[in-house]
Length: 263
Image 1 (cartoon, helix red, strand yellow):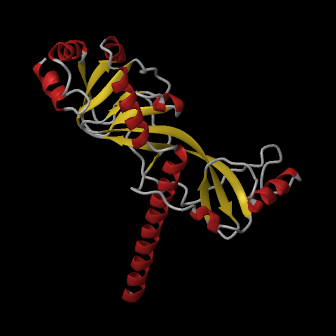
Image 2 (cartoon, helix red, strand yellow):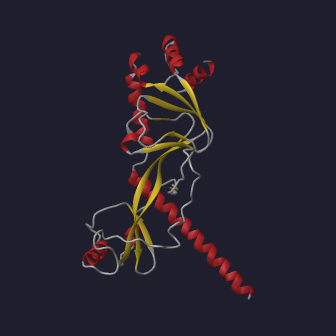
Image 3 (cartoon, one colour):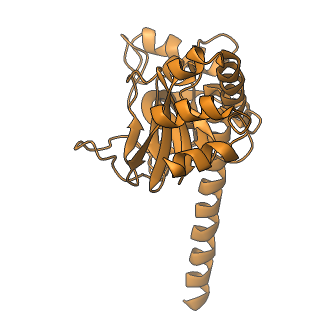
Protein backbone atom coordinates (compact mmCIF):
# COMPACT_ATOMS: atom_id res chain seq x y z
CA UNK A 1 0.00 0.00 0.00
CA UNK A 2 2.73 2.43 0.96
CA UNK A 3 4.66 1.77 -2.23
CA UNK A 4 1.63 2.35 -4.43
CA UNK A 5 0.82 5.60 -2.67
CA UNK A 6 4.40 6.83 -2.83
CA UNK A 7 4.50 6.15 -6.57
CA UNK A 8 1.20 7.95 -7.23
CA UNK A 9 2.24 10.94 -5.13
CA UNK A 10 5.28 11.41 -7.41
CA UNK A 11 3.28 11.11 -10.65
CA UNK A 12 2.18 14.32 -12.34
CA UNK A 13 -1.41 13.16 -12.88
CA UNK A 14 -2.02 12.04 -9.29
CA UNK A 15 0.11 14.14 -6.95
CA UNK A 16 -2.68 16.68 -6.36
CA UNK A 17 -5.42 14.20 -5.45
CA UNK A 18 -7.20 14.72 -2.15
CA UNK A 19 -6.42 12.32 0.67
CA UNK A 20 -9.75 10.49 0.32
CA UNK A 21 -9.46 10.09 -3.46
CA UNK A 22 -5.83 8.99 -3.17
CA UNK A 23 -6.90 6.33 -0.69
CA UNK A 24 -9.49 4.97 -3.15
CA UNK A 25 -6.93 4.85 -5.95
CA UNK A 26 -4.42 3.02 -3.77
CA UNK A 27 -7.03 0.50 -2.62
CA UNK A 28 -8.08 -0.27 -6.20
CA UNK A 29 -4.59 -0.35 -7.72
CA UNK A 30 -2.53 -3.49 -8.16
CA UNK A 31 1.12 -4.10 -9.03
CA UNK A 32 1.86 -6.65 -11.76
CA UNK A 33 5.32 -8.01 -12.58
CA UNK A 34 6.55 -9.35 -15.92
CA UNK A 35 9.72 -11.16 -16.91
CA UNK A 36 12.00 -10.05 -19.75
CA UNK A 37 10.30 -10.70 -23.13
CA UNK A 38 7.01 -11.62 -21.45
CA UNK A 39 3.85 -10.23 -23.02
CA UNK A 40 1.99 -7.67 -20.91
CA UNK A 41 -0.88 -7.41 -23.39
CA UNK A 42 -1.17 -9.71 -26.39
CA UNK A 43 -2.37 -8.48 -29.76
CA UNK A 44 -6.15 -8.73 -29.81
CA UNK A 45 -6.46 -8.91 -26.03
CA UNK A 46 -8.93 -6.44 -24.53
CA UNK A 47 -7.31 -4.52 -21.69
CA UNK A 48 -9.20 -1.30 -22.31
CA UNK A 49 -10.76 -1.27 -18.82
CA UNK A 50 -7.41 -0.64 -17.14
CA UNK A 51 -4.55 1.85 -17.25
CA UNK A 52 -0.99 0.50 -17.01
CA UNK A 53 1.73 2.75 -15.57
CA UNK A 54 5.35 1.58 -15.69
CA UNK A 55 6.96 1.56 -12.22
CA UNK A 56 10.25 -0.14 -13.10
CA UNK A 57 11.75 -1.49 -16.33
CA UNK A 58 10.74 -0.80 -19.91
CA UNK A 59 8.32 -2.20 -22.46
CA UNK A 60 7.29 -1.59 -26.07
CA UNK A 61 4.14 -1.60 -28.15
CA UNK A 62 4.44 -3.40 -31.47
CA UNK A 63 2.23 -4.59 -34.29
CA UNK A 64 2.68 -7.28 -36.92
CA UNK A 65 2.86 -5.83 -40.44
CA UNK A 66 3.05 -7.51 -43.83
CA UNK A 67 5.51 -5.75 -46.12
CA UNK A 68 5.99 -6.02 -49.86
CA UNK A 69 9.51 -7.24 -50.72
CA UNK A 70 10.69 -6.13 -54.17
CA UNK A 71 13.61 -7.82 -55.91
CA UNK A 72 14.89 -5.45 -58.60
CA UNK A 73 16.49 -6.45 -61.88
CA UNK A 74 19.84 -4.89 -60.97
CA UNK A 75 20.11 -7.09 -57.86
CA UNK A 76 18.95 -4.52 -55.31
CA UNK A 77 15.84 -4.89 -53.20
CA UNK A 78 13.43 -2.79 -51.19
CA UNK A 79 10.69 -3.19 -48.59
CA UNK A 80 7.47 -1.21 -48.73
CA UNK A 81 4.11 -1.04 -47.04
CA UNK A 82 1.44 -2.63 -49.25
CA UNK A 83 0.11 -0.06 -51.68
CA UNK A 84 -1.57 0.31 -55.05
CA UNK A 85 0.30 0.73 -58.33
CA UNK A 86 -0.76 4.40 -58.59
CA UNK A 87 2.38 6.44 -59.18
CA UNK A 88 4.52 3.29 -59.24
CA UNK A 89 5.32 2.61 -62.88
CA UNK A 90 7.87 -0.10 -62.03
CA UNK A 91 5.34 -2.11 -60.02
CA UNK A 92 2.63 -1.56 -62.62
CA UNK A 93 4.92 -2.97 -65.32
CA UNK A 94 5.73 -5.97 -63.15
CA UNK A 95 2.08 -6.76 -62.49
CA UNK A 96 1.28 -6.25 -66.17
CA UNK A 97 3.92 -8.81 -67.18
CA UNK A 98 2.68 -11.22 -64.52
CA UNK A 99 -0.93 -10.97 -65.67
CA UNK A 100 0.19 -11.84 -69.18
CA UNK A 101 1.67 -15.10 -67.91
CA UNK A 102 5.30 -13.97 -67.94
CA UNK A 103 7.98 -15.86 -66.09
CA UNK A 104 8.57 -13.16 -63.50
CA UNK A 105 5.58 -13.90 -61.27
CA UNK A 106 2.30 -15.61 -60.64
CA UNK A 107 -0.53 -14.74 -63.01
CA UNK A 108 -3.10 -15.05 -60.25
CA UNK A 109 -1.49 -12.86 -57.60
CA UNK A 110 1.29 -10.91 -59.30
CA UNK A 111 3.63 -12.08 -56.52
CA UNK A 112 6.48 -14.52 -56.34
CA UNK A 113 8.85 -15.46 -53.57
CA UNK A 114 12.47 -14.39 -53.67
CA UNK A 115 15.53 -15.63 -51.88
CA UNK A 116 18.13 -12.97 -51.24
CA UNK A 117 20.92 -13.09 -48.68
CA UNK A 118 19.83 -9.59 -47.64
CA UNK A 119 16.29 -10.62 -46.80
CA UNK A 120 17.06 -11.90 -43.31
CA UNK A 121 19.30 -9.15 -42.00
CA UNK A 122 16.95 -7.79 -39.33
CA UNK A 123 17.84 -8.80 -35.80
CA UNK A 124 15.67 -11.54 -34.32
CA UNK A 125 14.34 -11.13 -30.79
CA UNK A 126 14.01 -13.99 -28.35
CA UNK A 127 10.61 -15.66 -28.22
CA UNK A 128 7.99 -14.29 -25.88
CA UNK A 129 6.96 -16.63 -23.12
CA UNK A 130 3.92 -17.97 -24.94
CA UNK A 131 5.24 -21.44 -25.62
CA UNK A 132 5.32 -20.86 -29.38
CA UNK A 133 8.13 -20.02 -31.78
CA UNK A 134 8.47 -16.38 -32.76
CA UNK A 135 8.41 -16.70 -36.52
CA UNK A 136 8.93 -13.09 -37.60
CA UNK A 137 11.80 -10.69 -36.83
CA UNK A 138 11.20 -7.50 -34.95
CA UNK A 139 11.92 -4.38 -36.97
CA UNK A 140 14.47 -2.10 -35.35
CA UNK A 141 13.61 1.59 -34.98
CA UNK A 142 15.93 4.51 -35.45
CA UNK A 143 15.38 7.62 -33.35
CA UNK A 144 14.11 9.71 -36.26
CA UNK A 145 12.22 8.85 -39.43
CA UNK A 146 13.80 9.19 -42.86
CA UNK A 147 12.62 10.38 -46.23
CA UNK A 148 11.32 7.63 -48.49
CA UNK A 149 14.59 6.40 -49.95
CA UNK A 150 12.60 3.71 -51.77
CA UNK A 151 11.73 6.46 -54.28
CA UNK A 152 15.36 6.18 -55.36
CA UNK A 153 14.62 2.83 -56.98
CA UNK A 154 13.18 3.44 -60.43
CA UNK A 155 14.20 0.40 -62.46
CA UNK A 156 11.95 -2.59 -63.20
CA UNK A 157 10.81 -5.00 -60.53
CA UNK A 158 11.94 -8.58 -61.04
CA UNK A 159 9.74 -10.22 -58.40
CA UNK A 160 7.50 -9.36 -55.46
CA UNK A 161 6.89 -11.36 -52.31
CA UNK A 162 5.65 -10.65 -48.81
CA UNK A 163 7.53 -10.59 -45.51
CA UNK A 164 6.19 -10.08 -42.01
CA UNK A 165 7.86 -7.97 -39.33
CA UNK A 166 7.02 -6.87 -35.80
CA UNK A 167 7.10 -3.10 -36.05
CA UNK A 168 7.69 -1.11 -32.86
CA UNK A 169 5.33 1.86 -32.50
CA UNK A 170 6.42 3.00 -29.05
CA UNK A 171 8.94 2.36 -26.27
CA UNK A 172 7.48 2.93 -22.79
CA UNK A 173 9.66 3.81 -19.80
CA UNK A 174 9.23 4.48 -16.08
CA UNK A 175 6.35 6.83 -15.32
CA UNK A 176 4.82 6.41 -18.76
CA UNK A 177 1.55 4.62 -19.37
CA UNK A 178 -0.41 2.68 -21.96
CA UNK A 179 -3.88 1.25 -22.63
CA UNK A 180 -5.45 4.63 -21.84
CA UNK A 181 -6.56 5.47 -25.40
CA UNK A 182 -7.70 3.07 -28.12
CA UNK A 183 -4.24 3.13 -29.76
CA UNK A 184 -3.33 -0.48 -28.95
CA UNK A 185 -6.64 -1.89 -30.15
CA UNK A 186 -6.81 0.29 -33.24
CA UNK A 187 -3.32 -0.78 -34.37
CA UNK A 188 -3.61 -4.45 -33.25
CA UNK A 189 -0.67 -3.92 -30.90
CA UNK A 190 0.79 -6.18 -28.29
CA UNK A 191 2.90 -4.90 -25.39
CA UNK A 192 6.03 -6.80 -24.35
CA UNK A 193 8.62 -6.31 -21.61
CA UNK A 194 12.09 -5.27 -22.80
CA UNK A 195 13.45 -6.22 -19.38
CA UNK A 196 12.00 -7.10 -16.00
CA UNK A 197 8.94 -4.92 -15.65
CA UNK A 198 6.56 -3.74 -12.94
CA UNK A 199 3.31 -1.93 -13.75
CA UNK A 200 0.79 -0.22 -11.55
CA UNK A 201 -2.62 -1.20 -12.91
CA UNK A 202 -5.60 1.08 -12.29
CA UNK A 203 -9.22 0.37 -13.31
CA UNK A 204 -10.62 3.20 -15.42
CA UNK A 205 -13.89 3.11 -13.49
CA UNK A 206 -12.11 4.59 -10.44
CA UNK A 207 -11.35 7.73 -12.47
CA UNK A 208 -14.96 8.06 -13.54
CA UNK A 209 -16.41 7.45 -10.07
CA UNK A 210 -14.24 10.22 -8.65
CA UNK A 211 -14.95 12.81 -11.34
CA UNK A 212 -11.53 12.45 -12.95
CA UNK A 213 -12.53 11.60 -16.52
CA UNK A 214 -10.60 14.66 -17.65
CA UNK A 215 -7.41 13.05 -16.29
CA UNK A 216 -8.05 10.01 -18.47
CA UNK A 217 -8.53 12.31 -21.46
CA UNK A 218 -5.23 14.08 -20.75
CA UNK A 219 -3.39 10.76 -20.38
CA UNK A 220 -4.97 9.38 -23.57
CA UNK A 221 -3.90 12.47 -25.49
CA UNK A 222 -0.33 12.12 -24.19
CA UNK A 223 -0.25 8.41 -25.07
CA UNK A 224 -1.26 9.18 -28.65
CA UNK A 225 1.29 12.00 -28.89
CA UNK A 226 4.12 9.67 -27.84
CA UNK A 227 3.12 6.85 -30.21
CA UNK A 228 4.16 6.50 -33.84
CA UNK A 229 1.86 5.76 -36.72
CA UNK A 230 2.64 2.62 -38.70
CA UNK A 231 3.82 4.78 -41.61
CA UNK A 232 6.25 6.84 -39.52
CA UNK A 233 7.53 3.77 -37.66
CA UNK A 234 8.10 2.03 -40.98
CA UNK A 235 10.16 4.95 -42.30
CA UNK A 236 12.32 4.80 -39.15
CA UNK A 237 12.72 1.06 -39.66
CA UNK A 238 13.86 1.64 -43.25
CA UNK A 239 16.49 4.10 -42.10
CA UNK A 240 17.83 1.70 -39.48
CA UNK A 241 17.80 -1.26 -41.86
CA UNK A 242 19.53 0.73 -44.61
CA UNK A 243 22.25 1.79 -42.15
CA UNK A 244 22.78 -1.77 -40.88
CA UNK A 245 23.16 -3.12 -44.40
CA UNK A 246 25.62 -0.36 -45.26
CA UNK A 247 27.76 -1.22 -42.20
CA UNK A 248 27.76 -4.91 -43.09
CA UNK A 249 28.84 -4.18 -46.66
CA UNK A 250 31.53 -1.81 -45.40
CA UNK A 251 32.94 -4.43 -42.99
CA UNK A 252 32.82 -7.06 -45.72
CA UNK A 253 34.73 -4.81 -48.14
CA UNK A 254 37.39 -3.92 -45.55
CA UNK A 255 37.92 -7.58 -44.64
CA UNK A 256 38.15 -8.49 -48.31
CA UNK A 257 40.76 -5.79 -48.94
CA UNK A 258 42.87 -6.95 -45.98
CA UNK A 259 42.78 -10.54 -47.18
CA UNK A 260 43.82 -9.40 -50.63
CA UNK A 261 46.74 -7.43 -49.19
CA UNK A 262 47.95 -10.45 -47.20
CA UNK A 263 47.98 -12.60 -50.31
